[in-house]
Image (cartoon, rainbow over all chains, first blue to last red; front, side, top):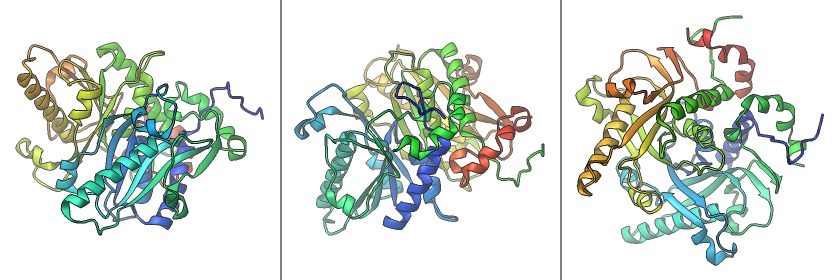
Length: 216
Length: 216
């Protein structure tokens, strides 16, 4: 079988994505239990978040609520230094705290899973986590509930092994709250929802589902 | 080939869903042009919305922004009469008008595509459309922009041929602003993101991709 070249339009299978979510859900259940809420970073996190929810729900349990936030990167702005991170991220949608309060609760003291498709430069994840932590801290101070421990975890389908432009707290890794069922080198990863000809992807089943080839 | 029974756990393929979005995007481009914004009804609309965005974007065009709203049905409440529709729908997240105003604009005068997975009782779609129309109307009155025409369209992967509990405006159908690339009888449709064993779904390729069998 031909080894795919970076120029090839090689896409991961949907079924492969589905299985990454399945593996991830098992790890999540084992390490942090069932999340109280999933926060999907759109657009990339929408699909893994929806699949994950199926696997995280046990029979006769209620669906885990999903809140969406919209974040985009100004790819070509700034130097990537930590001080500029906030400026590189465009926030197109944030949590609906009003609806949350009515149908859920605050985020204070909850087990919260943030979901995106890929951890590339880590800029978006850094931004999402620190802004959410800030919101919770402010709410907790306002309500006099600073003694409650809010647990944030992160799930991505794939983590790229590359120098990151931003950090996540080291406790997140030490305590097993960072989930990335697959790692890959800093190269092309195409997600199936960007495929124009999905049948071509199907033809590459053996390649794209063979981790040895894709993730050396 | 055995005709599947309702008891069989038969799921639509991801690739099939992908193609429904591809077909839908062609119809949308042809009838209403490129939407200015996609409003995804979560959780079900997240996956079709993200796939649709790939197909609606032409080379060198900007990504179409996606805003998520969260709607759930109180399945067992009420009688389904029109007067009770609002009460059957739980709104867990709504548009972030603040972020929209900063990075996009208002919805006034825009070409807006609402996306969900399935049109079952039509209750959720009715609710989403009428609430969004109300928001736009109120904003337009406030800003003195009632002369601008806002166009709402709807995309679902599948419309079930069954008596609906709520209506959509008949102009939406007459003017080709309702997109449902497939119709089916009122029966079991399982989406792949709910499949526990996705390999089983793959084995059913011929069945689930054969429209004649699934959508008589």
